[in-house]
Image 1 (cartoon, rainbow, N blue to C red):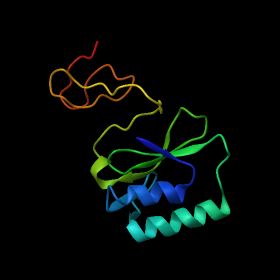
Image 2 (cartoon, one colour):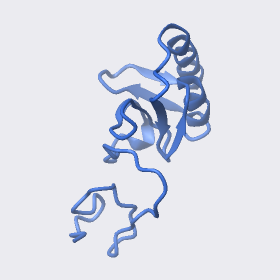
Image 3 (cartoon, rainbow, N blue to C red):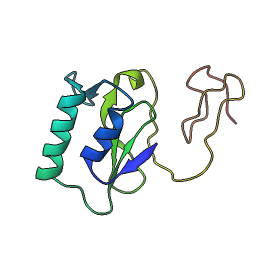
Image 4 (cartoon, rainbow, N blue to C red):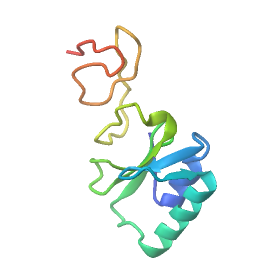
Amino acid sequence: MKQFNSLHDAAEYATSLSGQWSFINSDTAYASEGLLVLAQTSDAEDPIDEDSFYVVSDGGSIGLCEDEEDIDWLFIADQDKDLALPDTFTTGGTPRFCSQCGQEIVPGANFCDQCGASLN
């Protein structure tokens, strides 16, 4: 995951990873152009605090970290709809992978989301 200081910067990066998103609490779909306009408007009308930042998943979903740890997912990219996105953001560290199937492990998970193997 990468972090950004504005929703527009996060959306610009996310558009290189996906072509469509849904707002987390509705079925409203956004294409790249609509997401960028929405992000620019949001930044102008309601900028985030200096201690907050946006994150973009490897699939293009966009979340907000207001406490520098917990992620509130805002826009879910089409390719992330069936994946379990992490609840927290951690800097650095090496990603963990399931020894059974090779799937990247969500931080704090006890079982693999892909194959169900125990990770302990």
